[in-house]
Image (cartoon, rainbow, N blue to C red; front, side, top):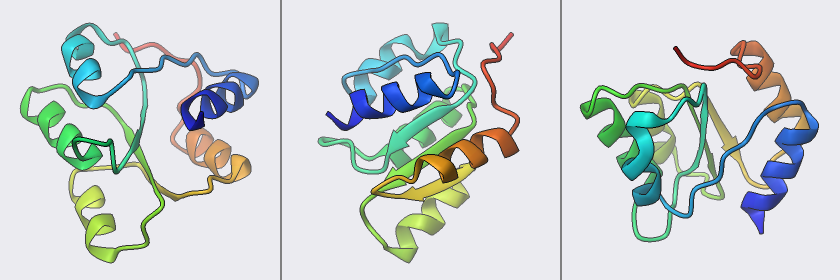
Amino acid sequence: MMREALQALLSSLGYTVELYESGEAFLERATACRAICLLIDVHLGSSSGIDLARQLVEAGLEFPIMFMTESNGEAERRQALEVGCVGYLQKPLAAKLLSQILARSKIRNRRRD
């Protein structure tokens, strides 16, 4: 439900959106991924979004990443910053804030080369 709502929001802002069922599903296709930004929940069910970001970096696949979370933990926020996130958002997400972070990061429907 949250994924579909985010897809609708980002699409309405002019972004092309791809959804993945899990971090593992994304990792299976990551080398072919042309995304210019990833929006990842810190808590992905069976794994951590921060761990997913670390796995991507270790594989040499560096994407700008924005994390979203319901948690307000400082240790979690620090870990997200250490892995290089461009944004760390608290749920419920504010559409205006998300749009501002994307614009500030100059992430606007570009494709990775």
